[in-house]
Length: 171
Image (cartoon, rainbow, N blue to C red; front, side, top):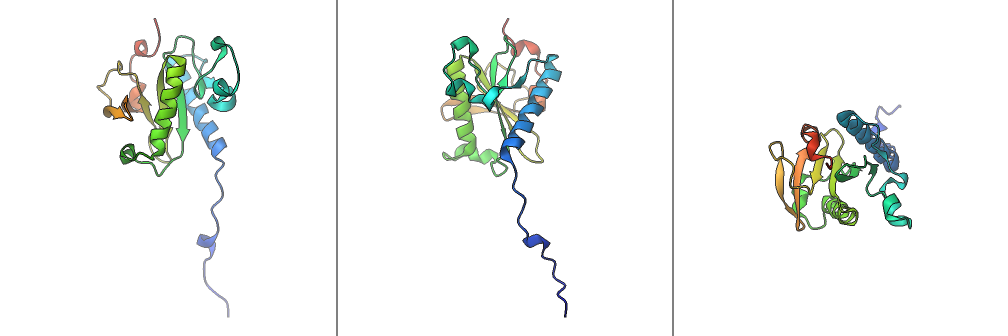
């Protein structure tokens, strides 16, 4: 007698290469910013952001964040992809991964003397942007408040990119 059971749901899921997934997201964000600001200066940084903290470089050569930005750009950029279990309610959980992401971006922000843009992409969801730049217009902002004593604004990425260039570049 032959079994008619479908065992395909019992097979293990293929492992996701999180490094490749993160690299793709960083490249996607760099491309999006290059198109938005009509430049080719946004690109992934060597070592994906850790370069400034793992190498002893002169200050003028240090790269903070996951992307290299134009010289007059006001922000360092951190990109995070995945973390699909993280929801907005996690901002109230002191052990939240999202809070750790904000803390890391804030630390790099202070070291670089620039504000941060933290881009978070989750599967099948629109990417969001979190920033500590309180001088951005808040008309399209979804949340404004303090997270771990850091004042932040939270936008949908698409809404953030509608803001005028003057808010993104030094004069």
